[in-house]
Image (cartoon, rainbow, N blue to C red; front, side):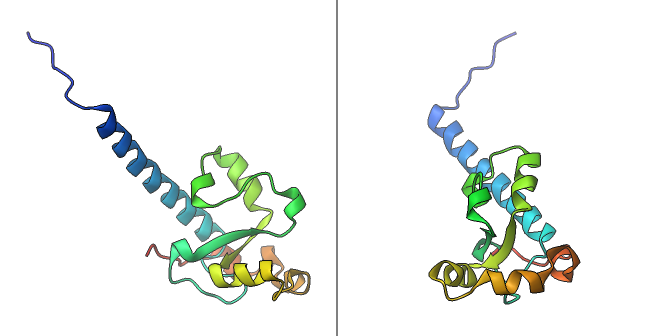
Length: 126
Protein backbone atom coordinates (compact mmCIF):
# COMPACT_ATOMS: atom_id res chain seq x y z
CA UNK A 1 0.00 0.00 0.00
CA UNK A 2 1.46 3.37 -1.00
CA UNK A 3 1.39 6.37 1.30
CA UNK A 4 -0.53 9.41 0.07
CA UNK A 5 1.77 12.31 -0.77
CA UNK A 6 0.78 15.71 0.59
CA UNK A 7 0.47 18.16 -2.31
CA UNK A 8 -0.83 21.21 -0.46
CA UNK A 9 1.54 24.09 0.08
CA UNK A 10 1.72 26.46 3.03
CA UNK A 11 0.34 29.28 0.88
CA UNK A 12 -2.69 27.15 -0.05
CA UNK A 13 -3.41 26.36 3.58
CA UNK A 14 -2.87 29.98 4.65
CA UNK A 15 -5.34 31.24 2.04
CA UNK A 16 -7.90 28.61 3.06
CA UNK A 17 -7.58 29.45 6.77
CA UNK A 18 -7.94 33.18 6.11
CA UNK A 19 -11.12 32.56 4.12
CA UNK A 20 -12.62 30.24 6.74
CA UNK A 21 -11.73 32.64 9.57
CA UNK A 22 -13.46 35.49 7.72
CA UNK A 23 -16.58 33.40 7.26
CA UNK A 24 -16.59 32.41 10.96
CA UNK A 25 -16.20 36.01 12.10
CA UNK A 26 -19.01 37.19 9.82
CA UNK A 27 -21.26 34.40 11.14
CA UNK A 28 -20.46 35.45 14.75
CA UNK A 29 -21.17 39.10 13.96
CA UNK A 30 -24.53 38.13 12.42
CA UNK A 31 -25.39 36.24 15.61
CA UNK A 32 -24.42 39.21 17.81
CA UNK A 33 -26.34 41.65 15.62
CA UNK A 34 -29.43 39.44 15.81
CA UNK A 35 -29.07 39.25 19.60
CA UNK A 36 -29.09 43.03 19.83
CA UNK A 37 -32.09 43.62 17.62
CA UNK A 38 -30.72 43.46 14.10
CA UNK A 39 -30.93 47.19 13.48
CA UNK A 40 -29.43 50.50 14.57
CA UNK A 41 -30.76 51.39 18.01
CA UNK A 42 -30.89 55.05 17.00
CA UNK A 43 -32.30 55.17 13.46
CA UNK A 44 -33.45 51.61 12.67
CA UNK A 45 -31.03 50.97 9.75
CA UNK A 46 -30.64 47.25 8.99
CA UNK A 47 -29.79 46.87 5.29
CA UNK A 48 -26.17 45.78 5.49
CA UNK A 49 -24.60 43.69 8.26
CA UNK A 50 -21.13 45.14 7.76
CA UNK A 51 -22.49 48.69 8.16
CA UNK A 52 -23.58 47.94 11.74
CA UNK A 53 -21.19 48.61 14.63
CA UNK A 54 -21.15 47.96 18.35
CA UNK A 55 -20.58 51.16 20.33
CA UNK A 56 -19.37 50.93 23.93
CA UNK A 57 -21.62 53.18 25.99
CA UNK A 58 -18.85 53.70 28.58
CA UNK A 59 -15.40 53.62 26.96
CA UNK A 60 -13.79 53.10 30.39
CA UNK A 61 -15.31 49.62 30.66
CA UNK A 62 -14.16 48.54 27.18
CA UNK A 63 -11.90 45.47 27.33
CA UNK A 64 -11.81 44.87 23.58
CA UNK A 65 -13.69 45.88 20.44
CA UNK A 66 -16.44 43.87 18.80
CA UNK A 67 -15.48 44.58 15.22
CA UNK A 68 -15.28 41.56 12.95
CA UNK A 69 -11.53 41.29 13.30
CA UNK A 70 -11.81 41.22 17.11
CA UNK A 71 -14.17 38.25 17.28
CA UNK A 72 -11.45 35.83 18.33
CA UNK A 73 -12.19 35.67 22.06
CA UNK A 74 -14.29 33.05 23.83
CA UNK A 75 -18.05 33.28 23.35
CA UNK A 76 -18.56 34.10 27.06
CA UNK A 77 -16.11 37.03 26.86
CA UNK A 78 -17.77 38.29 23.68
CA UNK A 79 -21.24 38.18 25.28
CA UNK A 80 -19.93 39.95 28.40
CA UNK A 81 -18.47 42.71 26.21
CA UNK A 82 -21.71 42.91 24.21
CA UNK A 83 -23.64 43.86 27.36
CA UNK A 84 -21.63 47.10 27.44
CA UNK A 85 -22.61 48.11 23.90
CA UNK A 86 -25.43 49.37 21.76
CA UNK A 87 -25.85 48.47 18.10
CA UNK A 88 -25.60 51.46 15.75
CA UNK A 89 -25.15 51.95 12.03
CA UNK A 90 -21.88 53.38 10.72
CA UNK A 91 -23.42 56.85 10.21
CA UNK A 92 -24.86 57.09 13.72
CA UNK A 93 -21.61 55.70 15.15
CA UNK A 94 -19.60 58.45 13.44
CA UNK A 95 -22.08 61.06 14.68
CA UNK A 96 -21.72 59.76 18.25
CA UNK A 97 -17.92 60.09 18.08
CA UNK A 98 -18.19 63.52 16.45
CA UNK A 99 -20.36 64.69 19.35
CA UNK A 100 -23.45 65.29 17.18
CA UNK A 101 -25.44 62.62 19.04
CA UNK A 102 -25.46 62.65 22.85
CA UNK A 103 -26.01 59.14 24.23
CA UNK A 104 -26.72 60.50 27.71
CA UNK A 105 -30.04 61.78 26.36
CA UNK A 106 -30.82 58.66 24.31
CA UNK A 107 -29.78 55.71 26.51
CA UNK A 108 -32.59 56.20 29.08
CA UNK A 109 -35.09 56.20 26.21
CA UNK A 110 -33.77 52.93 24.79
CA UNK A 111 -34.13 50.93 28.02
CA UNK A 112 -32.21 48.23 26.18
CA UNK A 113 -33.76 45.26 28.02
CA UNK A 114 -37.32 46.42 27.31
CA UNK A 115 -36.71 47.64 23.77
CA UNK A 116 -38.26 45.28 21.17
CA UNK A 117 -35.35 46.09 18.83
CA UNK A 118 -33.04 44.39 21.35
CA UNK A 119 -34.73 41.01 20.92
CA UNK A 120 -35.63 40.57 17.25
CA UNK A 121 -33.13 40.84 14.42
CA UNK A 122 -33.23 41.33 10.68
CA UNK A 123 -29.81 42.46 9.41
CA UNK A 124 -28.64 40.74 6.27
CA UNK A 125 -25.19 40.24 4.87
CA UNK A 126 -24.41 42.56 1.99
